[in-house]
Every structure is written in structure tokens, then in C-alpha cells.
Length: 243
Image (cartoon, rainbow, N blue to C red; front, side, top):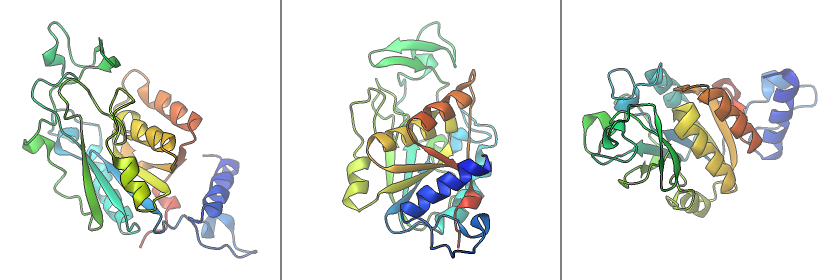
């Protein structure tokens, strides 16, 4: 991130009441860190056994986000956790489509679908949250992808872009105005969650170093471009004031 971009971003955060007051002579980068308040929530996306080494759909370096997310969690009064929660024979599994292989695509009723290895099947250890996650103020787990015939990358809407999970209403009822998104994977479930959060009217930050990507055929660069176009802001964990 260029200095001019970071200055603009931090000014926006100040305007939203997310950072403490800056003294007139205070150095911008030393003082202007984002301090999440009662109207902010941390969203921890799919930090599950299936997406780390040894899982059925491992994301490179996936487990590396766990200690960083745990550290960030201490700064948030409100935390939402999401969990991929598929049925056996789910429509997003390549095994459910004769002649198809993982990472190929097919057209389903709601549009194009990347086909994945069988993963995060309901009730299995593979689908469990990572054992080292420590999120003492987590209040709700949003399970997604549990309808057999439809995938759901986003924590806010299923892949048809019509069926809501209820998370938007849950957050608004609690006065949440800003969300910070972390987890796995940057270019799929994190990106879709962030963009749908913007669609729902929230201010959205993705904490880049608290995510990891699959990067399938350039999907990571494409995801950042799409998120930026939707008004999602890209920051680092060092931009957050931690306790």
C-alpha cells in the first residue's frame, strides 16, 4: 500500500470513529491505528481443519492465520465465526458430477460453480474449527453451504445472491456498522463475505495478513480487484490497535 493510500484509509477510519484522536503534531503512522469499538465486529471465516495442512482442501499456510487472529480477537467485543458445513454429495463436490475433476467448473442453477474435492462434511473432524482458535468474545457461528444443491462462499448470502443467511440482520440489530474480515480463503469465502457485507451496508476492512488464498488461475488478484471496486478496504494487522 502506498503512503498516500494509507493516509486516505486512515483518515476514513478516523471519520468513522474507529481510531483514537490524533494530536496535531503526532506522527501519522505512529499514532493512527484503528481501535475497534462497540460498533465493530471481527468476522473469522472458515478457519477449519479442512482448510489447513492435513485437511481435504488445504490452503497454503492456512494455519498461520490462527495465532494472528487470536491476537486480533482481544481487540473486539463482537466476533462472528463462519463454518463451511457441507452435506455428503454436495453440489460443489467434483465427485457429485460424473466425469468432472476437482478445480474444474460446471454450470448449476445459480451460475458457474468451481468444483472442489469433498471437504468440510457435516459432523466430521475435517469440518471442525481449528483447535487452537481462541475467540473468547465469539457470539455466533454461521454455518454455510449446508443446502445440498447450492454452495455458499459468503457469510451473508448463498451463491444465488438471493438467499440470506441472517448475518446482516443479526449485526445490524446489535448496532454493528463496521466489519473486519479474516480467515480462509482470501479469494473465495473471505472475498465474497467482504463484498456482501458492503452490499448489506457495512464499512468493510479485510485484514490481509490474517488471510491466506487458494489463488486458482489468478483468482487472488481478481478478488482484490473486485473487492476494491466494491469499496472494501485492504489493511494489515499492524493497522489495528491490539491489546
